[in-house]
Length: 348
Image 1 (cartoon, helix red, strand yellow):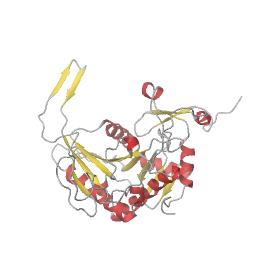
Image 2: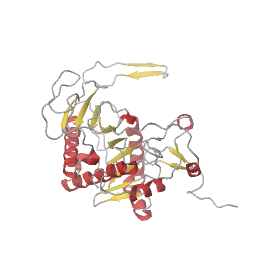
Image 3: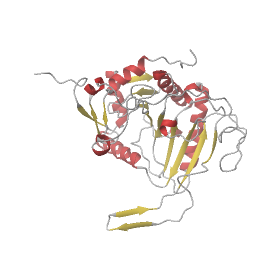
Image 4: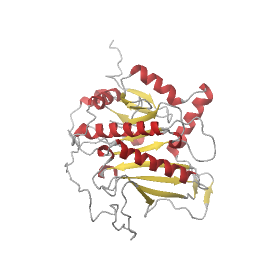
């Protein structure tokens, strides 16, 4: 009888951060692709675009003028999904129709005054300035009354629904704990209560021994393709120290985080020689007044591309009706990323 192989045969893997499972079907990566191919358009952007709502000195869609900012620039989203001062209200009809009001604040952070400068092409000191801005926003928003979670994220590229090409991220601060964060809170707390240690700290110990999913590491951070990755080239940046949020990082740790972000975004761009699309975001402790000691600071990258710059992974069919599924194994994805140069293809 043929011996089972995780490299060849279908199997499930548990996501320790959510408790959910992903189906891995490595044999399917050999199938021919006759699905959709998209036209690849390489758009060389200028350093300044007079029609851009986010460039320094320009007028935004709201009619407000941007300052002539020189580094990062943060402002309240002109078309926010959440608003701070709304009346409270809720309905509950037999626990079947359940809804309640949700208040919050949405902010936008322009990473750089340059219209054509993504994180991958910024230098480490410039990325460090972005991290300092994230820290300031996390602290200032998190201390406000009725703000119980601060979600820092970036949607990069048209493929991820980014509405403006000027490199920027968003911050949504809200009264409730988002469901993905709530899942992770539950896993962190249950593991800490049982083992007296951080879930991700113990997970890193295993990854350090096996090494096959690690893409990059420095003194304070590890970039790896998680064992349970759903997206083809999904990665996670994990702090080696058990800290709860970005405000607890030392200057040296922030420098190392900037390097980790630089390396993985450069590798993404080098994979298919394009400005690689993704959704990325920081997961950290809620600002709900609890100590949240079990929490462990980390950052997710969820890119959609699969086989080339134009072939992406679709979450359809079984993924919508059953559970997530992937073909290329996390180990194979990590090897591909690990072997890519750390110098951006535009700078070689």
